[in-house]
Length: 264
Image (cartoon, rainbow, N blue to C red; front, side, top):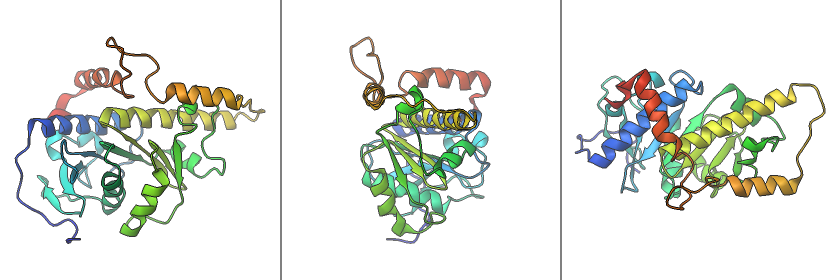
């Protein structure tokens, strides 16, 4: 492995990468808008189209509401910075460790999203973990992994254990830490996180009501999980799109009405 975070000259940015940068910058803005950011901490990454080696990630030190398409840093799996337009910022070491682990092992994953929300951290500390208390939570009933806390994720040796904990799932609860979701693309990873966050919030509300909890029958939980693993209804062509495919254009329109500077 070469030295982490060394720099190389700026590469040519393809049209596909430019679109990915817009989508990833939008994702940062949406995470902030939906109340899931943690000042300058956490990270969202996206694999460069047609490339198994490089991915984009945020400059460590910028607020999520500041992220733009052109400010994102391109890095490779060895930790070498390929392109960084920000003279005042580099990347978060923990972000490199977590995201390089998953991008290096899961070639079906186009985007990795990690948060430290109060609800996510609270559920990560519950021995019971995420419970299938409602339809939203059942989306993850058979598709969430758990990773034991090992300290701040700056040890590259932890990468293989992170990958093992995630397996082939699209959501991971980092014990005593937070939440992580993946997706084929940025849209799917974001919608997975928004639903997982909502499931954690409603679980905490339910548990705080100081009333007996009605658990649904396991057969119903299993049925709902299988129904919700993909979009519940087909598109006009009869295909079942990945989660987020329908929502993403609407989310971008909402951002454009509020502040389109993420596209810069």
